[in-house]
Length: 332
Image 1 (cartoon, helix red, strand yellow):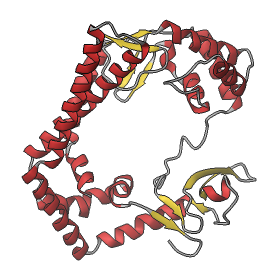
Image 2 (cartoon, rainbow, N blue to C red):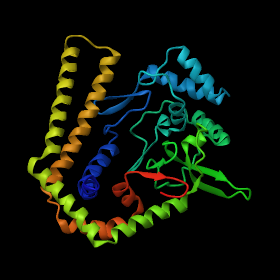
Image 3 (tube, rainbow, N blue to C red):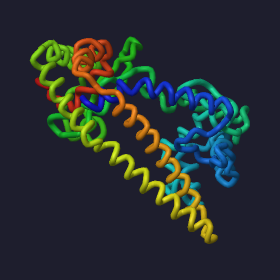
Image 4 (cartoon, helix red, strand yellow):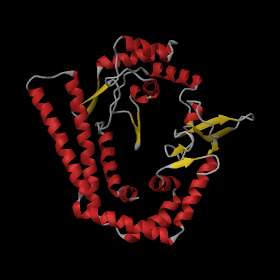
């Protein structure tokens, strides 16, 4: 609950950070995060890693000429080609084929950019692959449907996770369900499937009923304020983040010392990129935590959050309050 509140009231800082990132992206600058296979970051610019780019072009070309994914992946593994030190996975393979960054177009949270990623794959080849993917209907699993309870549900009988499931009725209409992994994948469970709307409405209504109790709201608000006051007093999270920042900086310094001594390998470069990315993430978390410490949380805000704000967004409510849902056929 406290973490959810902190996320909610950090929105102002998040907007400021996003504006800065947007301005950098308009200039074509790299703003952190994991890079695609085939690219590297040099002086805040993304450049093509030609050895990996040849593999990317090969994958697109072979898929366009009719080779299936398993055959291509098997050949790449036999040649010793790896993705982040591991053999290519099927999901990684299809993510690459779908990704327009390989033709220089980046669809990011704040807009579409064509000046960040230099193209690796010719657009006609990319379009040909997209047509094949669309024809084969690859990766079209419930992307238009938002399952509010994903990663929250556990089967009460076998203990496996319950996942989203989409089916087509005889009349052609699409139906959405939650189905036990033990039944679907391992065939060890007889847990019946549950309609998406029925389960989600039950969880939402039950949570609403709990929050309609002033006693429950007071209990939660008091507990949140106790945690907040302790956090403000000892600054525990900020201290942890600062220690992590110092450790990440120490790792970078050690790698730099190795580079200065002439120890430069592909592994060294990869470790440096990972360390710099981690340091950037930690610094952003420190900024957010410092902002939180400067803005004292009030009990009235917690009550307002529980009585009004959270009820207007089922997704926010479930994310903040629901830890786990255990399902049986006759009870939840």
